[in-house]
Image (cartoon, rainbow, N blue to C red):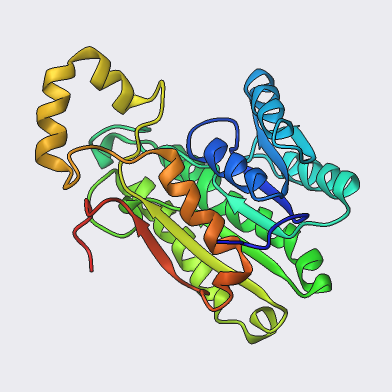
Length: 260
């Protein structure tokens, strides 16, 4: 399917590994010029080279999404280099393992930091991108949330932050002035995704047989998902083919979740 994304400019936050990296490469494969931002220069530069190998323009931007000044610098550099932004992927996030099991033993700072890294970062990047999208009468904002944002489970500060991301996208999608400027706002909700050097990958390496039994019991497909399986859905949502998809919360989990 021709997605008509060639020549579009996309920014993927948290694009140096995992789902963000896969999305950046999928969009580059469709002909988008892609900028990624993250904190670790060595990872950013490695993915930048992978994007360039697709024959498109690539930007590797260094910054912390929890710092407003860094977000402003990232957006300023992106616009200065590429002129405008067509696609924003709010992928940066995390904090699902922060804090303690007991809410009573978890400091208030954890709530603030997890919200800042997820929902507030998504809101800030979106606000910075909207003037350019409105001017050109076309834009796609896709936020990567989590099953924890739709269902019970997980630590409450993380669930609250990921639910907020869904709420932000849904609320913006309902604004006629934005929708009629050709901008859509959607949320992708991944299930368990196997990402190298993360908790699930470590568990698999530590006890392969135990992980196999767990996967057989927990996942309808008998396995977690891959970053690429999420990225393919994101690329379609960014396309002109998905122009009527606005305000959707799309679960990509192989049937793992329990919500309707």
